[in-house]
Length: 370
Image: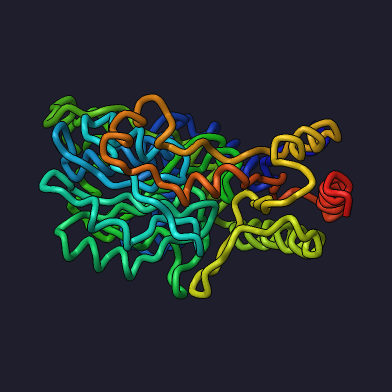
């Protein structure tokens, strides 16, 4: 591909910090950069505490385990997202129940939740989809009314804001991914952040084999190994220090795409609610009915031109591990399906030049005969 879907943006600062971590001899889960990254990221999110984990899926798994979710429980998740929320609910032995999304944000619809609550329902995972925060005032109200926990999955929404407040500061626990295509990226890696010291202490216990922090090799519970390394933390410290730069560049790429494709009548950018400030993860458009090309044909033409544009995920209710329960419950999430059948990603990263954006936009216009 001439232009990949995303590209890791590393500078001399990242290289220097990784070299410092290597020189220290601490390359595993302990070290100065782990402490610095956890403190810096908690401040950046505006919360009291953070613990690093091995990836964003591990963060969700740990958050559910900290809430004590297990066999017989149900957790409500959106039908439009990457598989991790549903996967992690299933991994702890519980059942994911799918809520549809709002057309105005593509995030979980708070109005769907009450009808899905049963005596087995423990909580809700809200995903900040493609960088757009969910409607947390309404979500917190409905969760409080039904006695449910709320987890914010902010894996795709580094730096975005809901009514002026930065993502990562909602729910009892929030989770992040630092996968290579994220706004803040370390290749792999994740974080759990919270203002609840009790929940955060449970995550720290669980991520380190359930071993007591005060009594080495004394395992209080059945845990796992979800630890992040000092090398990953070194990369993260640098990315946090460069966060304003990385976010501004990604936002500029998004704005350039929007302007270049504004007059293509068969395309629309993903919606943005008035209360949201979105730092884009991957720039997302949707093909409208009546377009001269369907999505598959458009993406095939872009790939022929060396552009790694991609469709979004499949509807979670169609995936084999979850489709049976979704059909039984009738939770088929039609709005999620309608969006996912037509939406696609264009290459996005803070390393993209305007010349590259213009080339992609020109190929889209050519394919759509505009």
